[in-house]
Image (cartoon, rainbow, N blue to C red):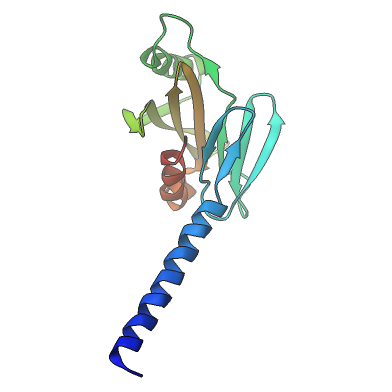
Length: 170
């Protein structure tokens, strides 16, 4: 085999691998035509649609029923309200819930042309610490609430895939 033939063979293999990876990413995309959003769920997670009236879709890893990523049906911000008002209400609702929670992180988040507010908090339930990440995404006066829930001991295992999923939200 000539050197040129070897180089062409290597380039062909690389091209096939890259094309296969790109096709795999496209195949795992999720689109919700009812509420007008799409995202790439974490690899290996399954979806349940129309589970209840307050959940547009829920994703979960195969081995854990206590780990989930939910997207609620969107709602409109009324005139004069901003995402910052909604963000304040999230924290007020936590305070009024009566549960003993700890805010781990809260910050504004840039998401491909959309404004978003992110809050991470933990609380104890039945002797186990739960960690919650909520991201409120504003798209044209419409808010989508994305909520990731996991026991603290599993949170770090899944957060990278969940963040990639949230970043892919359109």
